[in-house]
Structure formats: C-alpha cells, structure tokens
Image 1 (cartoon, rainbow, N blue to C red):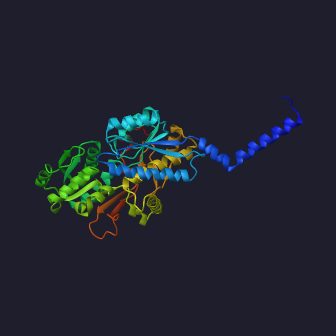
Image 2: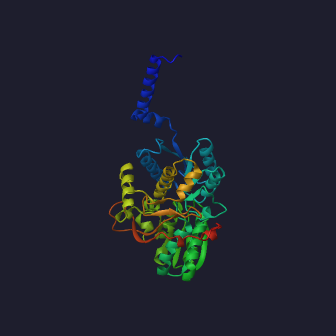
Image 3: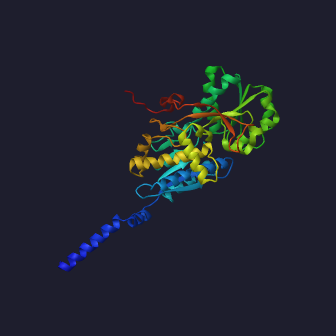
Length: 415
C-alpha cells in the first residue's frame, strides 16, 4: 500500500486509539479476564474422622484467596482455590495431588490436614518441582530425607507442640504418665515429643497404649489405664478420636484420679464434645480466637472471618489454612513470579504476621517458627458458644524449641 497522506493519518488514528484503549480501565478488565488464574491445589480430608477440621481449613483458605483478589491479585491475575477430598487416605491423597498438578495445572499446593497423608502429597509435589506448604503437624516432613527446596511447613511440629505442653503441664501434675496414642505418625511423634521434653523432669512412661485411627470404642483401654494409676493421661490423638476418647475417659471417671492433657486441644472437638466431656482438659494449640484481646492481627482475621461466615470464629486448623495460602500468595508478589522455585526463594525470606504475631520460615528446613498457646477447656463462665477455652500461657516463637537442623539431616554452613 502506498504511504499516502491519507494512509499516514489513518495509521496515526489507529495507534492513538489503541493507546487510549490500553490506558483505559476497560483494557485492564480485558487483560485481567484473559490472564490465567493462579491456581492453588488444596487436598484435605473433607470426609472421615477429621472432616470438621478440614472444612474449616477450606473456609479460611477461601478467605485468604478472597482477600488477595480483592486487593487486585498479581498483575491482574486472580487466585483460585481447587479443593480435593483426600479421604484421609495416603493413596487417595497422592492421586488427587497428581490430578491437581497434571490435569488442573495448579501452580502450588497447600493443605493436607493429617500426618497420614502429608508425606505422600509432599513426595508428589517435590518430584514435580511444585511448591507445597503443609498445614498438617508432622516432624518427618522437615527431615532431609523427605524435604526439598519446594517443601514448606506452616503448621507446628509435634516436637514443638508436645514440648510446650510438657513444659507447662508435667511440673504441675506428677511424674507418672500413660499415653493413649493413635497408631500412626501423628500419635507416635507426639509421644516422642512428650518423652524428650519430660526426660529432664524425671517423667516416667508407665505405658504407651496404641489404638487404630478412627476408633469409636475405648472401653477396652480404660480399665488398663485406671489400673496403672497414672498422675497424667496424655491423649495423643486427633479429631473424632480425641472427642471420643475424652468423652469416654470422662464417663469412666478417670478425671477423679488422673489429670488428662492432650498435645492439640482442638477447638472443633471441644465444640462438638461440649463442656462436660472436656472439663479440666488442657493442651496446646496453634491459635485460639481470643488472642484477639491482645493481638491486632488476630482481631483483624477474626473480624474478616466473622463477616464472611455469619459471625462464626475461625478454628486453630482453620487459621493454618488461611496462613498457608496467604503466605504463598504474598511470596508470589515478592518474587514477582509464579514459578515455584522463585516463589520458594521469596517464601524463605518472608516474615509475616497474618493472625497470631510474627512468624518466619527457618532457612534449613522451611519450618514456620511460631508461638504455641496453652489452653484449658472451660466448663463455666462461658460468654457465648465460642468462648470454650481459657488461655493459660503462650510459649513465644523460639528456634531453640525446634529439633536442630543437624538432627534433621540438613547441612548447616557455619561462619
């Protein structure tokens, strides 16, 4: 085409029109609509013994996504949470995670409520170089044999949780201990944490009585526990197992002679079990909503959750779902990328206070260093249905309470 004055003027008009379109809010909407979502896979046991905790994880994780999107996302890209039911089964967890990565093309994976499934999810992710932020209590996931550059652990570890509860409870209630233990990684690791913390205090293990995951009837175990006459009974189980064992131990009358404690005193289990079953039982938790009385970020998180979910307050494991997703999405912004390796590098540097005070990921194993809250179940003086615990103490974040990097098998560079 000849470059006539008419054609030249026409090109000027077209270029000017395109420039105006790009500069307009309308162009931003087109770009955002065309940009692929940042997909976060979220495997968790929506069915089974831990379903109540899992559903709260999903609600809080969805809140983190909603807040990220409301703030504009990342360069116009919105986040999307893809939830899958792992059915509390390692094989199912691996299959759902593989499907999320290969079929749904997720950018990252957050989730896995149980130590029974978190290692299989991690193995699938690290083999495919996809960042995984675990929100399940596990000691093993931090060990060099299971860990990778793509492995992060937002939840507390059993070593830290049990240690905090032991340091608070053992000096107060006597030295002879029986453990009623769910027979899988969570239970085993919790017992080890209590025993290691209790050894310098002269604690004596009278028995470690193990039960299958999902047990409903504890009547065969309770007479044996009573006959051993322990000062302390530690319920090293979770979810419905904790609820059922606490209720049946109460009904059996064990509280008249024995102090009952648990490493993780679950908000959801206490809500379901009621004040009588949990009366006097104390334990640890990563979060309790009444922390809002002293921590501004807890108050902001609770208020956002209340607004989103008809006045309800978030649970401990719900808060982990929120933080696990929020940390990854913040690292996307910090890295200016959605590539797992670049986001991993940014996440290693993150210091954050999403809901409970300052946290950070330890460099050698990507473990979130955070506080542990010691709570006791209330049976009287409750202001409303959510006011179920009394905060007894808060153990501040301290790397010294974690297993050392050397013990976990990580090489440590010394200067």
